[in-house]
Image 1 (spheres, rainbow, N blue to C red):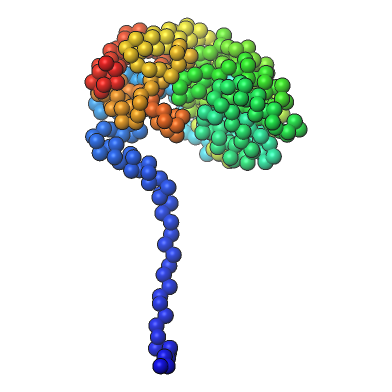
Image 2: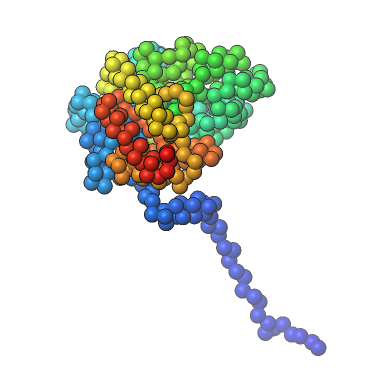
Length: 417
C-alpha cells in the first residue's frame, strides 16, 4: 500500500522545559516546612520590636534579654557614640552616594582609618562597607589564579567566597590543627604565592586558634598571614587588639581583618597592615572600589567607639567574668558546651538534633531570652547548637536570670534531666 504524506501532520515540537532554579533547595525547603508544621517558630525570622539597651529588647511585645547579638562591648547605646553619629548625620547628610575611590571619601572615613591605625599600632588601614566585604576584597585581591589560600576548614563564608572570587587554589587543613597546617604547606611549591588565613575566634563554637603555633609555621614556608579578628577585637590582648596580640604574634601577622558590627557596635569592615603597599589595594580591590562607602554617621560612630575601646580595660574584665560565670553555670546544669573552658564571649550549647535545638530555642524565647539557633552549613556537619553571645553590659543579676531560664527551658524540653 502506498502512503502519501502531503496531508500528514508533523508532530508539534515541544519547547524544552526550563529547569527550576529552586529545585536544588528542595530538600532544605521540605526540612524547614516539616519542622514549622510541628508548631515551632522560625528561629531565623525574629523581629525586634524595640531595642532598649545592648542587653534588652522587646520581641512580640515581651521584654527579652539579648544573648544572641555580637554586641560584645555594649557600644551600641554609648552616649558619645550616638552623639557623634547625630552630629555627622546633620553635618554631612545621610550618605555619600559614591565609592571610596571617587566621591565617597569624607574626612570622617580618613579619621576612622587613623583611629584604626592607632588602635592596632599599624601603618595602614582600609575601611570597607561591611566586614564580609573586607574578607572578600582582601583575600580575592591578594591571592589570584596560581596562588594558594591555605585556610582552616571551619573558616567563615566570606573567606571562602574571597577564595572563589580571586580564583585561587584552596587548601584546607583540619580545624585548629597546626600539624595538619604544616603538612599541607610542605606539599605546596616553594615558589608559589601562599596566603594562610586564620581566625582569632571561630564564631560558631567560640574556640580560639593557637596563633602562637600556627603563625610561625606559616612564616617557615614563606606564606603571608591574614588573621580575622572579627570576634576577638575589643577584649583579647592588653589593648583589645585580638588573639594575635594576646598570644604575642602581632609582629608576624601581615594583615588583620575586622568588623565594626561586633565590639565596635555599628556596621562596616576593615583591614590593617604594616605592608608598605597596602594603600595600593584601594585601586585593585573590587569589593572596595565598586561599592558605595559607609554613611558619614556610621564612620563617626565607629571612630568614637574605637577610640573608647582603647581604654576599655574594665569592660574587658567584666566580660570575661560573665563568660566564666555563665559557662560554669550551664555545665553545672547538665548542658554540653563546645569548649571545656570559656575561651571567648561565645558559648555554644550543643543539642543532639535540629528539632531539639529549635524546641529549646523556642522555650528560651518564651521565658524571655533570645539566643541564636545554629545548624549546618553554618556549623560543622551534624552539629546543632544554641549560640550565646555575652555582652560587657550584662549584669551579674542578668547572668543569674539567664541560668534560671536555661534550667526551666532545659527541663521543659527534656534537654537536661
